[in-house]
Length: 335
Length: 289
Image 1 (cartoon, each protein chain N blue to C red):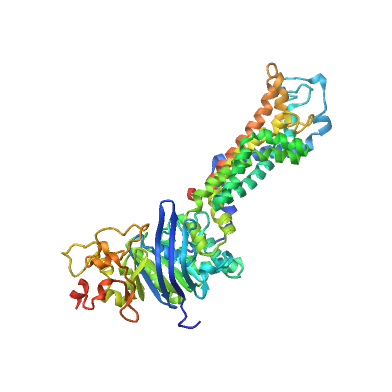
Image 2: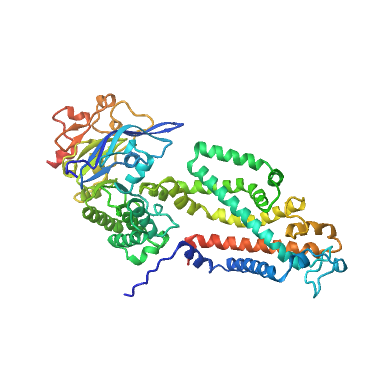
């Protein structure tokens, strides 16, 4: 495979959930590109459309009520949205794999963990049961579990161990893209660090690209090469970790940083972003962040900003930058 | 560090390992195995023509004694012999009928529950229609239309139970199908059939199995009912339900004639229910000690 070939190329993706109460615009025209062996973090608050994007990549949006209104998703060359179910089954698990948020519910309680890892291997590789079993044992050791646990059932494992098993299932067929949907949200802090280290190590061993969905900017800084900040179904800022963290452009990203504790300034209170995300059933005419934005002008409520490139890698969508002298607070202090 | 020896355990041996720990389950198993063994041995001890249906008017309506443990019936036939011989029909047809209705009902129910929408509507409305007709009526119609034989009797008894199994399975499948591990299975590329039978049904089957063991009793009574109106096992072949029915007219003076076939049905049903409880408990790995 050529190095420049994209592992994931999402363009103009629109996902809606059509319900009797109205249409929920979950993802509104998203572009996302991931290069081989690169990790992209996707941050945003609950309901920003992160998980919908992830599910759309695997064409797993529950339908009904979910509808992929438009868009093109190229996954390592496969046109995911225009494939037959049987072809999709081949792609899922072998080309792209997913680590789920809650390890407590993502394992089947009546199958032992060995069987669950084997299942994925048997679905995608033409190997005998014995070989698959051996491979499953090896995977268990890779994720730091003793192979004697292979016949254990999920309820016999702790949350962290379950998440390790889920990682083993995701990586056993050596996927080109790993989607991790808030992989540590359900774990306690000490285990979080271990699991993240494990994911990072295995990602490097298997040379897998990764889409990491989280709302923890710290995790992104540690694990990822690039960041996409999502708000109300749109990507509002995208850049390398360095771009976004040191040269923040979008007021929403700034708001996210302000709502984190700052170790240098222990006395100051956290500054949460006031207000709530707009009702996803009614997309506002202007910038969807305008009602909560301290920089908002009248124009922001009338016109929707588009992604503007600041450098080769850095893009943000904010009308304020039409004034070339505009700087957000965070950058004024930083310089 | 002592390494734990790892050996592969099949799902079946896993269930059996847990099952052995259940006292009531083992009791039920002992009862049913005992009944089956008796029926099997009885096959070699008794001769059908002389012992089972051979009439002996001189010994008719005798109370239980050392010679006839359960007494004799209105034709002087030994009731114990007839219960042992009759057990094969009740048990075999009862089990076959429950098995048949369970398999068909589970397939319909899991498809209805999993796919929802039009598939569900069609299957469930058919189930409604069938449920609106009394099971015994369905059985009668079936035997009348397609002729009287043990196979047809099995179908006749099972057909009325299919809607109930379909409902139970559908309800159970619906609670399971939205679990995250089902989505996870889809995410590793499992197709719908694998998901239904391996991931959904394995987690949804317990209430169906318990219900099935409870229905064996009902099926045995169903066979008896059909026998009573002359559409099931025909006289003089003994069958528990038919024996019960024919003893009905002597209930006032010779209650033992109805008592023992009734006890046979009761003990058998009890045995199957205890087995059902044991199976349910052992299939849930969370209860493992």
